[in-house]
Length: 353
Ligand SMILES: NC(=O)c1ccc[n+]([C@@H]2O[C@H](COP(=O)([O-])OP(=O)(O)OC[C@H]3O[C@@H](n4cnc5c(N)ncnc54)[C@H](O)[C@@H]3O)[C@@H](O)[C@H]2O)c1
Image (tube, protein in one colour):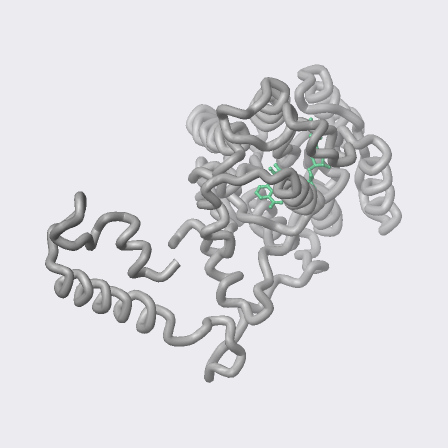
């Protein structure tokens, strides 16, 4: 929409005979609109930031997918929830490559076992616990398995999370799953609300409860990183329990930071923007199928979809899993000794504009 039409729609520049907005003569309104159009359209977009022909244009050099720091977690016993695929799988692998003994938990039993086996095949230390973080007993088992297998628990990445109430590998069939899929509040089903809140909030709480019990028992300090989202600091249309649950993950993080600082335990979170993983691809498949049913909303969520770095990238490339994992591990490591209760918005600048 042209800026001029937008202003008219908003009633900002109505002519004297109009019913709302600032009262202007027709000539004054035209003058104002032209001035704003010049200011906002032409000068605000003098060149395409992604245009490779602009002198000096350069993409950010990204952390390579296989980058790791040898020995950084040598001998540390670390839990990763949601280890079967996506960022959890990449975090588990990089931790093991950096010397950690990794215990991974996932509800996807076969894939979780395969992922951990592929880490072990590199000659690294990792073990798999099948489980669902919404079950307190599974979270307890995850921690006791880590202690029995490796002797203690030093750190944890609570990464398992969902955007909808489908089983993570369930085939998407939007018309028959509406009560479990993303929807605005007036259309949202109980199963959708309950499952997303249960996994992202209660599951993170259960995971932390057992991890912290063990760390308190050991009295050797510790470090926890909870995986929230940029949806934990702002709204994202059409995903009410996801947004509410990720705000809650930030809240749990801050609360735990206060309670456990005296015991040498740091608790932080990451607020990542969209990152290409199976979850992301599934979310877009759901949106694609939903559009196929004739669904329409205001579309405001789609008005801003690119991060600052993606907008500026010559290939419009978004965040990579390796970039997210790099920050998770930094926060988990002793290098972040002065950081607790913080959220690192690993969103390519999405939330700054
Ligand atoms: N991909 C993104 O764009 C994005 C953006 C912001 C935040 N996040 C968050 O990052 C985390 C990882 O997401 P991802 O993109 O790698 O997703 P993913 O779906 O690829 O991986 C999530 C993993 O969690 C597991 N899981 C789900 N529910 C579980 C449960 N109840 N118990 C145990 N395991 C369970 C899944 O089986 C899967 O292996 C999530 O918390 C997600 O909300 C993702």
